[in-house]
Length: 236
Image (cartoon, rainbow, N blue to C red; front, side):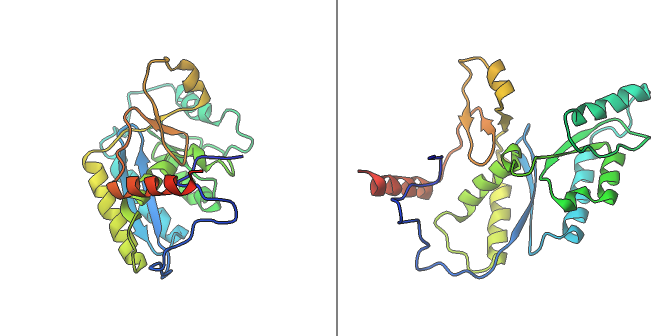
């Protein structure tokens, strides 16, 4: 079944790398994305092991939570627990919540990986008032960070020929800084929201997840040229 993609090519003639392409290694991009504001926190890394990811995640989550009040007015513990457990309704394998729960301050959506379920990390998140929500296996499209990574990758690398993983990471970091100067908020466009949305509200789809924007994202001149060229090649 045909599906949206960056370009179309005839059968048995897939897209190929240009002669300038040299595979000189890969780089990992650690990403935290806040859809309501469009702000993105990004860090290139040579590896993405737990020893690298967990300290980086704790550092940036602590900075994000710093302006959020750590303590709320006295509340019924049952009400606090209900605010946490409502996010586990319908899960086949929910993790056990600690007995003493602080007020819920943040929802963290990420992939269903073994490293994201390390007991020490999960306990730390709960102690900070962070509820981890895991996307189903094969459901990365539920994570809007997939969309922002695709947008940044297109802006950083389209039409370019990096020669090292360090250069890729530098370009990603520079592109993310430019994005944060004038970010675009993302909204979720799932089936429930589609039923509630009025017919006249403008919405623009993004590739990579179920995220959308109220305003279309501007594409670079090189990307538009590549798109026109691809269209000419597949025109019959």
